[in-house]
Image 1 (cartoon, helix red, strand yellow):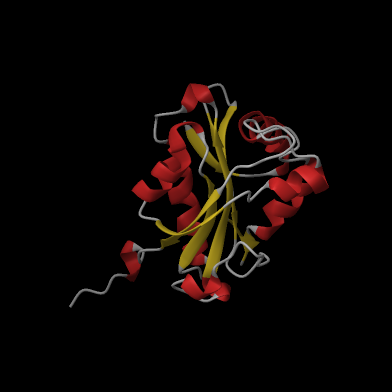
Image 2: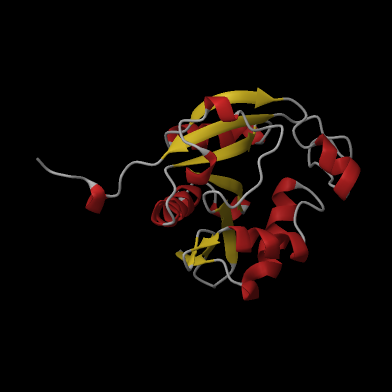
Length: 195
């Protein structure tokens, strides 16, 4: 398994995987291109893909650089441990069924956090899909050290109405909720001061 920065030649398989896991019309070329740009700061790309031994995309993580994403009504800013200019955003992750349970999502998260920290990030926010099979998404992010801030009912319903999103569980009237979670970045080993 190899972890690489997300680049345009891999957009098509990332879009296919995203729509397979998260539902039809979740990602398209235009939205993915914009999201990739939101993850670039100081010449560093915070979005990654995982390739199997045959160079097939088996997972991806889209992350936005600190301060390079818009706040919305699902952001509980008063509960955040850092201000928006230092808060990165974990937009999306998906792992193909064949690669699940192998630590791929954790490896992608680590790669993103390493870059986000170098971009000036002190924490990362995510809106986690609570209805993912077995609530695996929330369990995985909690295991990584993230803390729950708030649950937002019907978080993606507006996308069904405005973007034609089709939820894999609810269809064209998504009722799924999001767990707003924050992961505070630990200092990198080189940043730790020994006394």
